Image (cartoon, rainbow, N blue to C red):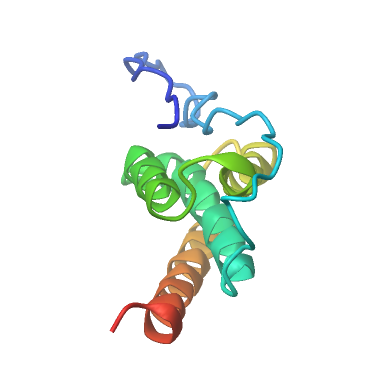
Length: 141
């Protein structure tokens, strides 16, 4: 199971710009040598990597721009990891993609802007399409 930092209480801010707390990325997983039991990645691996990156971006942006449900997106990512990559190199790749998405916006946005809101909308649409496509094309019937 992925180690997550314990939830930290939100500090009270006085007239400060609203920004998510730093350190809400998923902990980096040590690169494990590929094992014979892991086998090759599934054909939808590129879509999972993109979905992981989108979940990371949404985790940051949704805390920044209002609903403050970034933790919900981290929980969705943890569920994805449990379903698709319990251990090994795949887990590290997916976690890295999540953190890349999170850090990409963390370094760019310190307050909610119209562009940040637009990114949220685009990512919700794209993530929904990816999840639907994977389930439709590769899901169990």
